[in-house]
Length: 301
Picture (tube, rainbow, N blue to C red):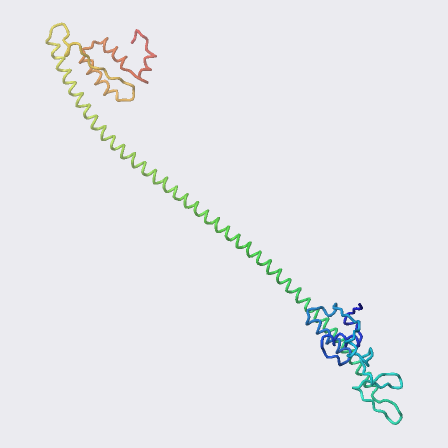
């Protein structure tokens, strides 16, 4: 089955194809070509690539009978030079037998061929314009896609920066709160220490006052006992027969004067002599105070 492109079709084949679409088959070749190209474009085909079946059928004979390949009518006239004249060209025969309309027909054919070339050039320019437009649209789409990607990246970076800023601000706030709490805690500790110190000093004052009162009572008691010993017999008389007052211990941390008064009061109450006092003092020493005994001989002790 022979097939051809539009540019390869003859006038008769153009009319056959147009007749199959029910289109007008009159006109010169350029007109027929333009008409068939419009039909191909309307069907969504590329006019430069679409092909048509050129095999004649019975139905096609009625449309092309009596017509030749050059799209001229059958009742044509010829000049003496062999040029053909169509029905549109009226041959005016002069007395000499020459045809006057021959030049006009040739000029029309030249114009028709020039129009066809111009038309093809225009179609080519239009196609090139469409191709450029498609390329431009494609580039614009790529640019838009690239711009969207850059925008997404920028939004992501902005979100990360904001999250990092919030975290840093939270950390700074926690550090400030921690520093404030530590400072406040130190202030509270100092206040508590001061209150405890004042309280302890107050309590110690009461305790020392009570101790001094007790020592005063003991001194008075010892003075009375000494007075009784002067007026008694040569044998010592104890306050409570068979009982002894416990001698306090001394570790070097408490007041020596207070310990001395307590020690002397206990020795006087127990009626200790010098030897007994020395023994009691050695036994009363504790801790660092007892370390002094390492440097004293037994005899000296």
